[in-house]
Length: 353
Image (tube, rainbow, N blue to C red; front, side, top):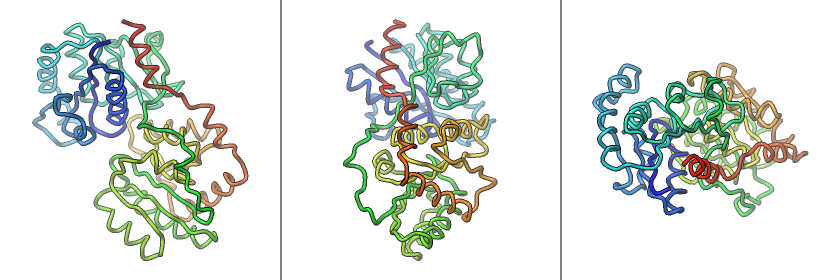
């Protein structure tokens, strides 16, 4: 394997596993380039310019019409880029923008693989399944995969950000509870409005201090920080944390949306969680991601429509007490995590070659 192209854009759910795979291939001395769009470029700022192709687009709105109108331009840019420098494999990570590069790759007789991050296969990956030589999945029983393509499927897990479960990352202050709030790569207004009130309400019920790490929308940060500070709670608030795996490791409980990257980082951390799936996610995939943890009693799902600070505060209290009395959650999560995902993907690519 001499060269591979990675394709994906939009949100962290598509881009973070790409970044992990890019770093892995580089360590293996395999030439690797990223193909993404203007939205995805945010996640690849640290990658040298020579290793990425950012597709230019006319329409920067995120609505469906703009996405469709951008595809022809993406296709022609991708076609000439792929024609100029051939790779052994092209690996797509979902999202509408992957349609153009992978269709161009098929015309140029590339070997094609796709990776599905969520528990429900996305529309782009469903439409590319007939072109793919290999279909990688994160979850064992991924929904909406056409039965005629099941022989292509390899359940390899999720490439996640340099995540190592290290005891040195676990905080040792027994008089402090650490709560990590994750709104997803785009933040969450619902969590920004509700979680701080729930945590303040929790503070009155326990005799320990609380430290909050809160990732939220840029426009909500000042309000969130002021609320915590006015209620004498220590906090670390930002719209994006580059060291999120470490912050998860140092937490006692995670409150989060349930995108695939975060869900799998929670699995690896072996920490209790409360998951509030984004209600407008395509095919309700965030609910099914969260269900992979809730069905083994390792997480509590609260639907967005049922979210309020009183019931959230009670669930945090209940989950903290349950975890304190039992190692059940850590034990269960350790059984469902799939290790060595990046190695698994590379091995399958070599096997196909």
